Picture (cartoon, helix red, strand yellow):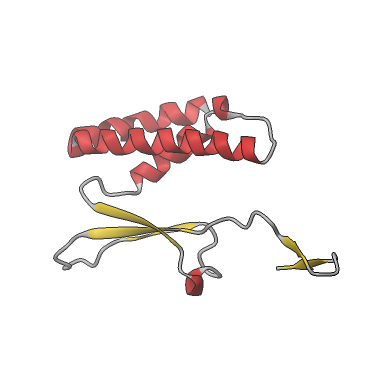
Length: 126
């Protein structure tokens, strides 16, 4: 994983060179949040915390490379009508000639409990 991170460093340097401090802030925030949420989710599900392998850093960098640095971004829960087609997350860029350039990032909440007990105590699929 470290070799992949090293291979992405020229793209990171180019983004900071062309887009300035906002790109640096976007990559830093994306990487930091990916590491924190990776560790929290692994701890929540009782798994061994493996943030030192670098996979969360790669995820954060790839997410930051796909977001425009000068755009306002709103993170919202995926609407119910789109959940069958958006399993995890998607980015919706603003229209080309829209006056307020604001994109949306839809995030689908995970189903923590796949089975729900009915009144008799038998499991039912949700």
